[in-house]
Image 1 (spheres, rainbow, N blue to C red):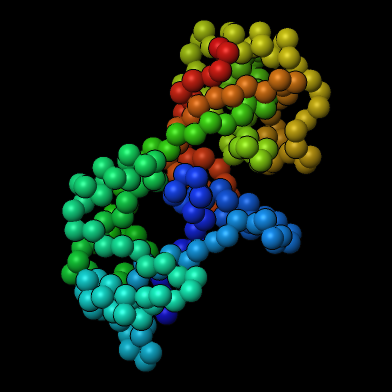
Image 2: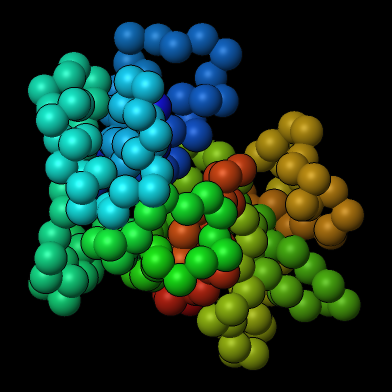
Length: 226
């Protein structure tokens, strides 16, 4: 019994892209062009009839390498002893973060322990603002999509009063009644939306992707043309 996660390694970026996994899951049928997935193994819980969970992590990792090395479709997560160097490496390459585990720790389910820690790196990406949420005659937030036109969330952090005035003027000049999505995501159904005939490119940072493909705590860095 192994513990791991399905990932998609982007061939150009050279790192996992969680959105591609969600894109494949949402597809009704998997085509030849669908993202190729890899199962990255973190830990081993049971080895044959032997329960490994009480053994130290370092011992489990050594056994995992013996059991799962060179198995097609599996990739064993590497173990690095220099945490600072690993953090610098991940930050330079735009990875989501690192996981730190005590080498002597047993396998524990859930998060109510102090043996494993996840440290996140803020992700930055280009997105497309396809609409504005309007409240009380002002732009409250931007409705964002990814390159495949999937809804990935709304962003208001990073907007100042000047930007809100300019965006409201932009909405007046580039407003359309043609919605991008039918039906609307539940997150948008109760909002007044100004759809844009000419969407805007934006740079946004966020902490991680949620399981339903939304950005967690997005913040606008820049808006093209504003």
